[in-house]
View 1 (tube, rainbow, N blue to C red):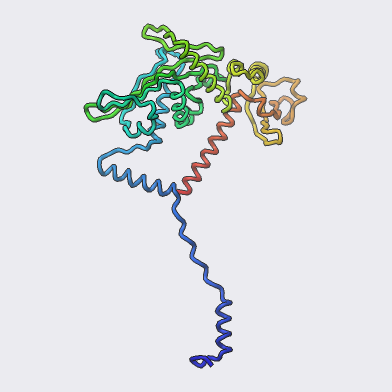
View 2 (tube, rainbow, N blue to C red):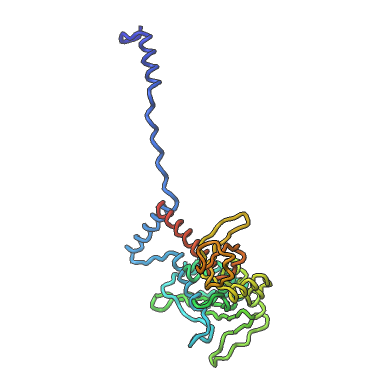
Length: 342
């Protein structure tokens, strides 16, 4: 017998039933805040505190974007009064600590004037390293036209890139504390224009005459431009046949010649992944009766569509625009997913 008048058998049966009863579920562990959420919360707190103290806070990413956009916007073709291929402007309210974080310390010059910090990019290597990191942070419409320290100049009516702008070494950026307590970032640079034939157009002086470049400077600029244009080609940007030939890519140059002269692509309709790579369904502009043998869709007289491998379409604006749209969609999905997390 057990205490309380319960027999041993009854005790064992009760114990067995208790063990067999379903256990209550364990409480789920509290989901830890994501790093992104913690960072956003901390940023909000800091900006609120700064506002209470009468300060304005800028995110470094926004300042980098503003600087990159300001430079790329001023790299333009010769048109109207824009003949000199030189830029001298300032960005107001640019914090010194942001400038020190964005601009490379190895380019900072010893300052003899209080309140002035100057970064000078005296070599092509330093300049290209800096711009290669800065330009991708510009808005997508501007950054997609750049590579290294160069920018492709293409109007909406042009099918391919024929002219490239390239910033010359010697670029200077100064942060200045003004007498009234305000701060400004001063940017000064010159750039050359090079066309698909290899002709280089130097900046102009006050009399509108091209400045004579030192042979060494021109040689370094040409070498860097070809490296940047090669990167543009790898990004799928629609280079002209002339640029492909400068890069030694005769096959791609001929492909551009063929598609730009003999046949016009109306649009790309769809894409397929095959063992041999990507293939695109191409809708050809115009109509020729001899194309009927190649038709795979539609009826006689309709636009002809055929499947073509990606490498056969390199240099075409349609391919570039298609892949840019894909990249934009992927970026939007990632941004949406991150917003969902926060």
